Length: 358
Image: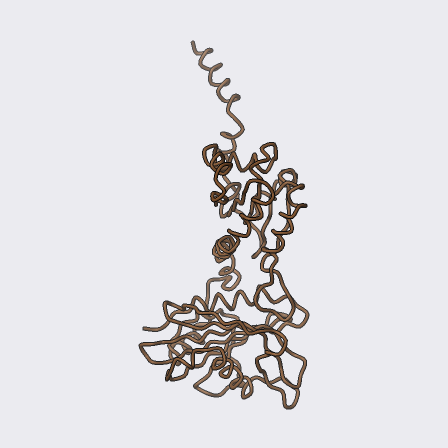
């Protein structure tokens, strides 16, 4: 009897499926860089107009830079490429693109297994069901976005329809990585942050590397700088009495930028000053919310008059209605010859996550 039990136990152990054994193995933590997106698609799909559509959307220009930089850094893997190196499955963000009409496709088979038979059959019969989201498929902290359609045109339509929501979901997923890049030790420059809170009524959670510029000696403006090798990040904070809605438009906010830029931001060249550059690239205007308060967001480029300097900027004019004030926060990057997207994303994160003092 004892021998029979041992034989049954051994039979059970060795007949366990690979899936069960995998599920018993702890998952690794996902890794990867900010804005890195892996596209999983069959080669024939990625080399068709689907691949062109993926590049069109995911590599569209980040707003707004002196030289174009893509919104996401993408790379294409087939399912076979994914299996070729174990660590590829541990990356942070995947977009799986499949044609549900091609049931022999390895990517479609992956989709079918992941979303289940009922949903797969639904995708084959209903055009409106063309996307899904999963997490932690191969590693903890992983985002998996599924885009699918019937035939090549169906997949392209799904990409066009779902891309804005996909980009927002990836950005939200990347917030954890972005926060870690900005605050590697979860610390602040408490002295500068307290001064900004006291003078302007806003908590910017200023990272420790930002230091107060000595060139500004005025209680109505604070200029903070962060030098990272060959890239400089700057934040300028001001406030104005709120008198009318006309102050909360693009022209008025640009005038606020140019006024302080002419007075305080110069290079070593005589007669130089910073101004908003509007001649060749537009300044984009958006309605926004900062800590629930109405705000106008501007994005554009700046240049140093009478010198060869420039870069991107983002500005928030925040209406602090209880105090009848406009809090003006401007951030810009200078990094000649360097990619600036990631540095701008850090500044946008700081400004968008500001808190108004009650």
